[in-house]
Image 1 (tube, chains in turn purple, orange):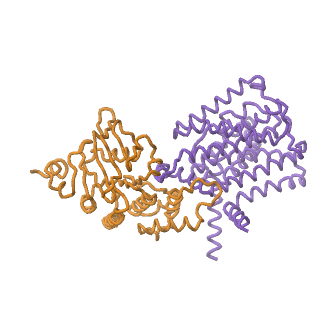
Image 2 (cartoon, rainbow over the protein chains, first blue to last red; image 1 turned 30 degrees about the vertical axis):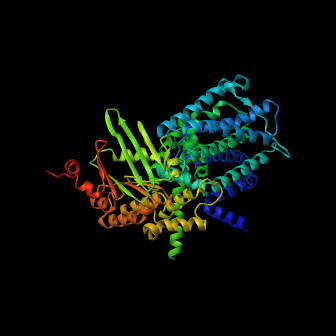
Image 3 (tube, rainbow over the protein chains, first blue to last red; image 1 turned 30 degrees about the horizontal axis):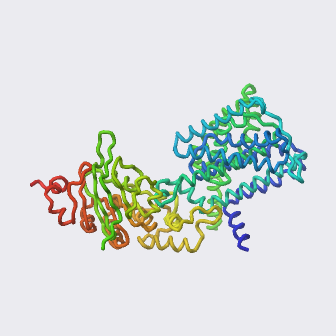
Length: 334
Length: 249
């Protein structure tokens, strides 16, 4: 009974998130009715990017730590699958375990050093570590170096992923678990202190709590979530290369979070959906207006992002939140 | 017998050629309010920072309850029994007043490091947080954001958060700064009512409050102690009158 009550409280705390998760869960039914299986592929990409962005948002949106190197953890997660397979380990659960473990260990090492700095120094150190890892994997010729390596979809004991729909629901379940875990953490005592650190670190220290300890643990958790996204990404793409951990990918994660709203748990998922829809449709739109510029869709996207940052003051979720508040107030007065 | 809570031995700190504190010796007993006064730039806040641990002295010893704490971080010193209010209001502005108190209560009980337990719905924590706010008369503002209450109320909230950790030593850096006359009187009465529970080191420019509260006063000028004694001794000290109180004799 207590667990049920707590579950309902969790769902109530972020209805948008659960509506989105339900939407993703039912989406393959829609694509099979409309015979558009291609969209399942897009939805998987959105879920994977959304999952990694959710991981980063634990420290960015709720801890105030601007890490510009989280793509490195997606890469480590993806290479955990590729390298395991290279050495004959085909069990997908083991791949995920390795991805979580390696990302946690690397996250601990980077966090331990980088979190002693703040502001621009923290951004630069995380970026530097990520670029070091990027070039490390570029130099690993045995695993394909710059060209990367092919990956077979893993076996998850009784589930093998030859059917894309199985992969879809594996990714969906992982996303569901990540959302639940992050919701629990953010609303927990640990999560509240983390948000307190974002608000005023010196006050948290003045209460006798070591902010560094909380920040390191949040960083490790965040890295592990990105690693999970990376491991599933390798299965989805059936290929992994250092490109996945390039700094521009870290920027993409931040764009997704800022677009969706970094103070909201559902923000990164909304951001990922809008980002991919724009990536899909803006080139087509540009093609009609200026055919030679259709590849440069970022020309339109850039000002849109600036507008979101300037006018919503909290991303797209802030707009939804305002609409929701107005509707509930109107209902209250009628 | 009076118990010495804080003891400073020959504390010196310089920033390049600027001498912030020089061979300072000071002790604060349990139940006493020891005020530090002096003109701007005398080194009062720098001394508080060294005791709190956000600055390290170049030389000298800081003893809390007889234990040397020179090489510990601020959060460790707080756990050892130091509570601090800052010169500029330092509360969680994005949290409600009640949530500020709840976070303090979580910290005091050592229950902050829990990943799946909800933060704000535990009855025992809530009751503790209510007591914290009740103690400074802020319960009526519990549901307001700390950013939305008045400056004086924020000073009160900060005092409440400093006291909430049950410190042995309370470092109060201008707790009345910017507060109105009524709020200053309220803060003074709270500090007075709680003084028996702690040793208090107070920096304050409001001399009325200082002379009402202090059991001992130390006067700093350019990082050095020029006088230390009871309020009567200080007010009658010619060096102090000359250097600080502006007596033209």
